[in-house]
Length: 490
Image (cartoon, rainbow, N blue to C red; front, side, top):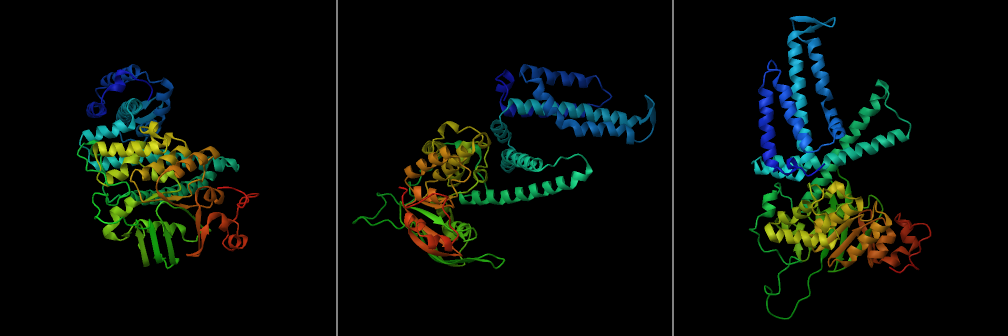
């Protein structure tokens, strides 16, 4: 936003109502009443001046009107008779009036849109739509569009840079084929991202409906479950204390995809409470397939998965997805709400938390990753390392039994790697870390398992596995040049 004027402070729902009413008046005004349109434009420009919007900003954003200008200029040329001579050109008289109408009304509409966007944060706009009783699903769609427009634009920018770095310049029709191919690739990538976002939503308890902002802030909050999701001591039966069940038990797990590809061939894995375990293996080994079984996104073809004593099946899915928190590799797949606070609240809200209980859960999760001061920031305004930390917070807010991290160190600079490692060593939760970053696995995980061709082929101390050259070579695992796990203290 570009200032804090009186225009900025008007509630968003009132701005929306005022602009909608104003535009209805503009659209319904016949072009023959031509003197009204300069008056309408003067009203909008005076509000822009009151809001102290920079002229260059307004001019840049007015470029969106170019298609309307082209269309308006074409109407007198292609319009129907009668025709008149203007500067030696034969133009359609109805086309002139229609073109003038389109140009005047489109210009005023674009100016109103610029004024609204430049003086109202996105979060307030969405809240305003909700207060105006716009259907919740439409508000949620608008929020997704705003969030992922920035992601898609960034993808377009990187694709353009990649083309230009290889000598490509779009000079004419001969280059249109390349542009069309890039557009197709962008569409496919956007579709694939949509699938990953949906998986991230499912893993945090999404069941087809999303809680609204109002639901997240109402005070009728149920009592939060115990931190580990198990019965509290007051609920437990009297008698001698019992050992808690293992955080994860996978027995004889096999799975084949619908196309017939067999990804898992009988996986057995047990992880005790509080362990930090690295899941290693080459690409195509079945690591992602195994992870998606842990919280019921994929259903076992054969075998069982048990999380803290609870079988992973359809009946238990809501609790299973609370107990198993997955942090996906790309934080942009995991951060799909307009603000950090709402992203972290998404999972607990799907569990039924509201009001103070929900806000406390969000505050605690953000504080645990050092991001409490960024709660009201849009995710796309954060650095990659900050987004990774917020992605961890979105899962910690559900108080999981197991924290599953998919390539947590990818694309992080050394300082961000260290900060994330400090966070992961401090959280009191079982960790399963899927990674190709073998030094990071040695640093964080005392134990490692190697998955290769759908079966676990090794399980032991991380340092011992990494120091076994025959095992490493057999399963396409390689250490960085000069790294010796035998002399590096984790």
